[in-house]
Image (tube, rainbow, N blue to C red; front, side):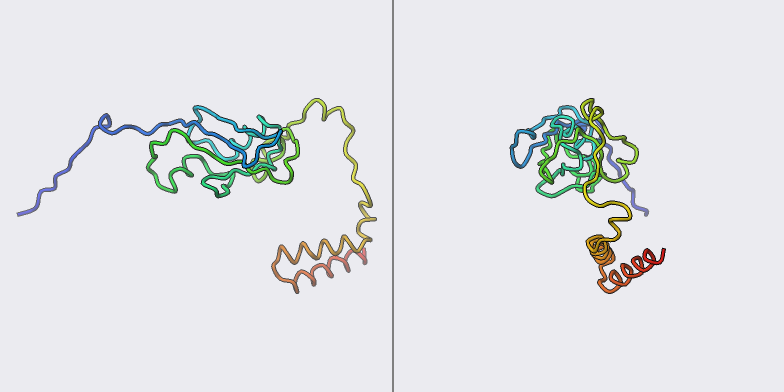
Length: 187
């Protein structure tokens, strides 16, 4: 005789539903006058790391590109959401109500007003300019520029170093730097 399959169903009221919002604390690794802890209540699980960096940047006036968030002592990419981080890749949402990120300030933590950014979000987000920045004259590059810069050995050394590092092939980097220089000299 065929075996009967029995299924059991559970109602949704018997299992507690996971929270849809969290309290997130952004705590700097080192306390400085420009960085302080920030607690953000009732943020959705779909909040991205980039959104958290933007909120912290607005709170502290640090530039977004100078802020790196760490979750469980590991750096996290801007594209991840809080849900992805606390789940560890699983589809089940744990019943976590509070999450803490460490904030690492990179490059001295220059004041930037939250402008700029890295990656695809920077292309869609215009930089924020404060009224004081609007009144200042545009910054002018110091030292040689344009055609003058191309005449310096430092430029060609930098180009060679960039190509070697980017291509991870010293021979090919040297060769391409030579090709570029020859083409420039002929023009």
